[in-house]
Length: 305
Ligand code: CP
Image (cartoon, rainbow, N blue to C red; front, side, top):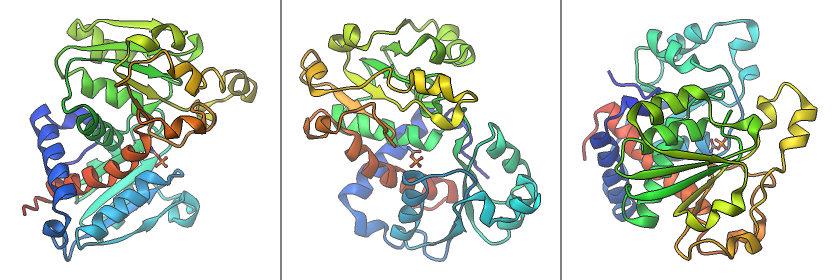
C-alpha cells in the first residue's frame, strides 16, 4: 500500500508519470469519468483549507467516486480527545483513501502507521505539502514545457512555508535548477531543508532579503504568504507581514517569460493588478491542482484507465 507523506515518497519517474496522466486528464476528461466508481475518498481537515480540500473532493467526484469527511477538527471526535491515530483507524473502515491536513508536523506520518488505506498528506503544520508540489510541478511543466534548467526564486515566508519546503525538495532532483531564496532574516529557509535538499547534493543557492535586485534573473517566481497562524508573537507577524508586495511596477524589470506562482491564499503579497499580467500563473495553478490530484488518487488506488 502506497502513501504520500513526503514528496520524496515519489520517484522522479513517478512524478513525471503523474504529470503525464494529469495532462491526459486535461485533454480527455470523459475517459476518466468512471475511473474510481464505487471508491470513496475521506478528507480529514483538522486545519482550514479552500483549495486543497475542495480540489481533492472535486477530483474524486470527477473520477466517478464519492467523498466524505470533515473540514474542521471541532466537528470530529478529536474535539472529545480522540487521537489522530484512532480517528484515522476509524475512517479507514469507511473509506478507500484518506487525504488529511493537520497543524502538527508529522501527523500524517503517524496516521499512516495505523491506517489500512492510503494516506495523503494534505499539509502538516509548517513542514510539508506534497500535493501542492505536484500542483506546482504540473503548472511549471504547462507554463514552461519542462522541469529543468531554470532560475527559481522563492519569496516570502520560507521558514514556515510548507509548500516551499516540498517544492525545493522536488526541484532539487531535476537538472540545473538555480535557487534564489528571498526572505526576511527571520523567515529564512530552515537549515534542515537546505542541508537535505541543497547542500548535501552540492546544489548552489543564494539567499537575499531584496526581491527587486534578483527579480530580473528569475525564470520562475514562487511567492508565498507570511502565515499569521504560524507565529507565536503577533507583533512579529505585523512587522513582517508586508515584507514583499509584488506590483506591476516591480514586474517591469522581470523577464518577459517569467512565470509567477503562488500556492494561495494570498493576503497582500501580490497586488491584484498583477492578476491581469499574462505571467501570473497562480489561477491556472489552482485548476491544475485538481487535475494532478485526480492522477494521484488513481495511482494510489492502483486504478488504470
Ligand atoms: N494551497 C493551499 O494549500 O491552499 P488551501 O490552504 O486553501 O488548501
